[in-house]
Amino acid sequence: MTIWKYSEVGHNQDAKKEVKPFNNDDVFETPKPERLIERVLTLGSNPGDLVLDSFLGSGTTAAVAQKMGRRYIGIELGNHAYTHCYPRLKMVTDGTDQGGISKAQNWKGGSGFKFYELAPSLLKEDQFGNLVINKEYNADMLAAAMAKQEGYTYQPDTALYWKQGQSSEHDYIYTTTQFLTVESLDAISETMQEGESLLICCTAFQKECTTHHPNITVKKIPQMLLGRCEFNKDNYNLNIIDMPKMDDEEDPDEDYLPEPAPQEAEENNKNNQPTLFD
Ligand SMILES: C[S@@+](CC[C@H](N)C(=O)[O-])C[C@H]1O[C@@H](n2cnc3c(N)ncnc32)[C@H](O)[C@@H]1O
Image (cartoon, rainbow, N blue to C red; front, side, top):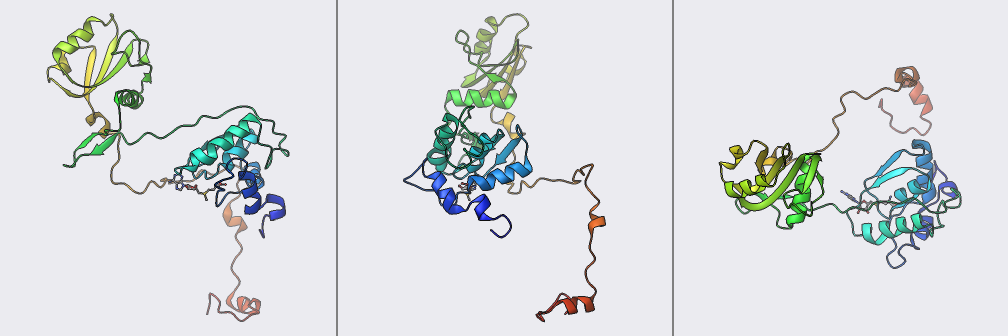
């Protein structure tokens, strides 16, 4: 309030009023006023820039970013992702939200947003501490997840069951939880065209399968995933070794004001409070 006047950037009471149209029954406890975020985005971004708010709350940052022509990613783990963020952004893009900064930004609605749910963890430990595929995954979810992990576009073919995804024109992926035998591999191979290759992700296979057809690679889930997972790590701090320096950034040393000498500090200390030098 003392630095950015609340008369200019609003306060929590304004923010609560802004949130009411999206959910009047359960008004969010700590929303931020749109004008405050508008000022932050004005200072820190340009139209078209990507804004990230990993604690989206009632969705203020996303709503403001949308109205100010920024792209955005919002992350929220609470249920208010459904009860607040989604309806708010829906009203913003529909143009039915005329609160907050709508007038100032001449916001009439438009554009859109994508709403994703994070999938459950693919791997889980069983009672013996072994990593197994999470039972929450059904066959389609698993096939989609494996395609994503391996860099394939998940796009199941209606005619051939093993064509679940593609990485290039002739390279396919197939995920199955069935035990893979040489016979099942032969059956697939017979339906493959010349020049086509296939990656099969399965939970168990006959050992001859790995060398049976040169254009078919067989990998075992979850082993193929383990190399990409990190376990028992609770610190994901960015390891920035050398901060980039902007061209027009002045050398901080030039602005450095030396601390007052001890006597000077004493004179400045009108209230006779203990100082650093006492
Ligand atoms: C103080 S609120 C943010 C308020 C928001 N700026 C607004 O204007 O409505 C913080 C939010 O972060 C969410 N949160 C906390 N930890 C999180 C996490 N690890 N991932 C995603 N959201 C998280 C909480 O559920 C809460 O809604």
